[in-house]
Length: 94
Image (cartoon, rainbow, N blue to C red; front, side, top):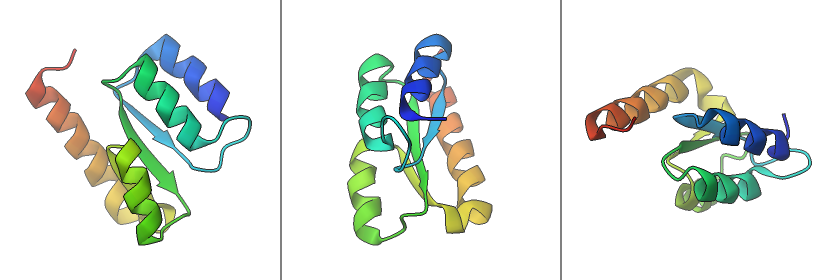
């Protein structure tokens, strides 16, 4: 999926959580994150990417609710998703 397709899906489905990569065709994940925040601000954003430098995580953390390097998918992705969903349930998001 490319960034434009992601935006179309977000407009249509209004998901609770979206996983984005930094490197996406047509529109990169950073641009898509800005647009998703504008369209559906309550949607949680997770960057799931091969870029795992601490500086990258810090910058992406300004745009997103979470960051998981692909190398840590097996240990970090599911707990992060569960935590974000639980937070949404506790705050009463529809």
